[in-house]
Image 1 (cartoon, rainbow, N blue to C red):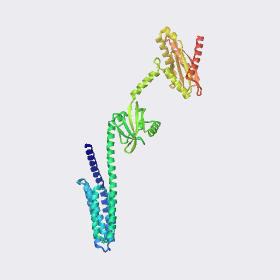
Image 2 (image 1 turned 60 degrees about the vertical axis):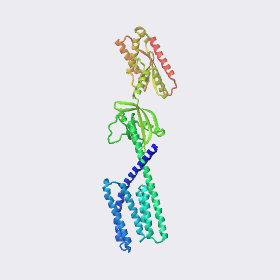
Image 3 (image 1 turned 180 degrees about the vertical axis):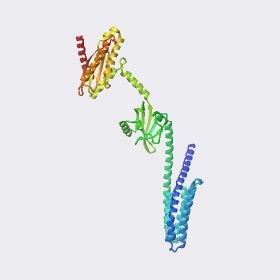
Image 4 (image 1 turned 30 degrees about the vertical axis):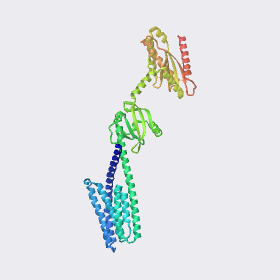
Length: 482
């Protein structure tokens, strides 16, 4: 019961709000109508006193002049009222009064026409004009139409002696009143529905904006067409470290500075309507980056297709992932890549059919150093060799430990002569350290090469086997030489 009462109360309040709004709009329209009547009165004056000057119908002429003067007078009065509208107690009363006056003028003009032209055109025009231009509350309009139509028919009966002519005018005028009322009802109903829908939309927008701003996560709402940002909550401004908003609106292109990435997102959103768990690295400032997990969804906001973006900061998670990956990919002793990571790199190069030179390295005399000086010195031997080798490698070359005292170098964008010259420089560095006698051991290594060229059918295992055999040949020769 309470719910029904509350609904009725809401409907009643909504109806009152619309009537006030409607009368406010019609009050503004009356200003235009009044100015139109005032500016056209000179034309009526010419008709009354010039064109009809020779007409021998004094009653018709006098009444016509009176009607035209009365129309101009009430228009002037309205303009005066309009300029004092802030002091008016009720604009609604003024609007309804003027509607009634216009209907009376129309009826009076047509009654007067019976003295001369025998038509009711003026009345019909006013009835339809009121319905289209001034559609007031249908209940009040029905009362006014009924009263004026009844008065018009009574006056017409006294003026028109011919029964059938009277019936014809009765049918035509009454039909026009019914049609005019239907038109006014349609306009009024449409405007009321539009007003109520706009109110609901306004409340929905207010509710959405309230929830949007109170959301603890950074939220961004931007147009799909040009990435213009419509809404940003406080959390988003702080998260993306945006400057204070100036005259120009924010643009969401900073979220996806890469054009290809932006086009990919637009294509996916158009097809799928939403994208979940989209991971992206974003440059917040010149020296600060963040990893973000984005949820993107297409929504309609104020008749505009927009992208709603929910942001979650996953920088800490990504940093931990990178640390774990580093531990999983790096050899703890030497700091270079480990076997698993190196083998994966070789496999990728073979899949992509990229040319490279593989150098299989075996550090000499590790067992002797371990047996003579201990394993810690042996570890130092391995680390020193890695440091010397790394110092000569370019940024695109890769060194990784395949196990024990065995290492592999992958040379990219180099020919065999360049690689051999580079290794010769490494051996010179070994000799420099050996001659300094800063270490209790001698640095040296055996190596074998394999030049992989695109189109060669070979597995990772076969490639390593070939390089290992070449290295073993060199190692055997060195032992024989010693």
